[in-house]
Image (cartoon, rainbow, N blue to C red):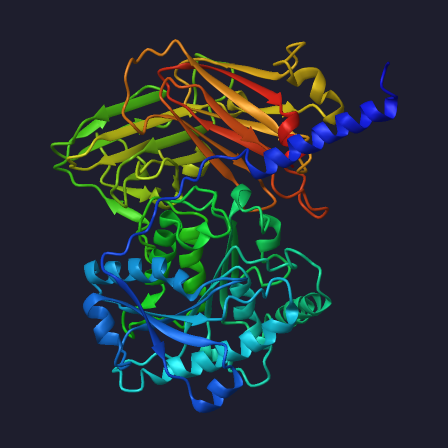
Length: 609
């Protein structure tokens, strides 16, 4: 007997729902985070609180972190370093401070500047503050008392701090911002806040009216006082991306809450030198993110005072460098030379082709590779108007542009282009890229790559190309076509396809129609006819999905000659006030291979979205 239509519909709906739940909970990349390790046994030294504070908050504690000899040193609480206070989140432990604190200790030991960070952590009794707003006021007031007590430990220091860096995980980041709403709080006590997977916009689970009211009070205060009380307070917020199923990335943004001149919001998937999605707990120990955070914290220290710089604009430049636009440098540079002097004793090699490639296992001596800027060509009717420069050179100032004068066979100086670079995955490859229009070079006649002496492998690619041939527009199919062209793989072969020939380094596909989470696709990139048989570990394809209305770009990497599969979907929908710009898929290719690209819809990912 045939089943009634309503039962068939119910079974089909249940199947789709189950597929969506599976995709949401399981169908994401493996955890790419490396572990952080303690080199000595960690100790959490309990700090005695004033009797008044202890009676008022008997359930809370304050600890200072230490290891080995350093633990014995700080146990006296006669401190001279830079104070950092870690605030755990919902059901969080004060012991979660150990990853940042241990890395800071090792980095300080190896640093020439000898900056020392003293890490404190509050024990908030692992309260479920993310579910009940009645707890957050007490936590905020206790943290205020801790900050005042911490600063008192530096009374005898030669250069005592006037503020404490706050690092908050999850709801701990909200507690950090809530401090400023306290009537007796001095905003000069905190000028730097770093939050990890903190839902700044609204509660992750909005089931408590007290918590909702607390959010409204905090965010309203921050909007109204952005140009007064909070004008010198800088905030960094990182969301975990797809792996964080507790706090979605859209909740972690500071947009509309913190002034854009004082806040940096991004996803850990987009952070240069990290490029990993972190689950909610992994956010505190993921080694890639811990290293990025510590580099930023070292860079905001004033070398004269050995404390956090009072220049809020400088702190913002540092945070943008490390969390948004790293050009390949481990350290933020305030004064980047605009012009470089070229040594006349170093060999000058001119490379005439549109595509210049160089690879060497090591550089026994420094060389200048001079690539003439192509203004006109007879080979193609399409104007060459763009250039891409890729390299793994570790030198900070490694590429420039110069104008060769008449009767000269080489340039004597050039305009530095190094700051325009963007770091690319995989991590530890030192790969970076510059993309620009040739007109941005002005009257320059040559692009000069400075390949310095090195015992490591050096690779350089410079390609000049017509933008119209590499920036393509794909109109992605809508939801009504999902099941027609997706399963089995492209029944009617209607998926978007592209054939890429050899000697192509870069393609950008503008994906019109991908403006909300309810669309999801998969990019299949297959190498073909590779002229090269073997390649180094870090050679291959790098792809990135850039979302113009948020810092939620995702990155992927597949090794040389391996087929890559890359999810094409967004975490947050396009805002109504966003500019009319499409998401675009960028591919940085190995020029020795041809490629076949196919974009297919993914119904399972759609249900997960």
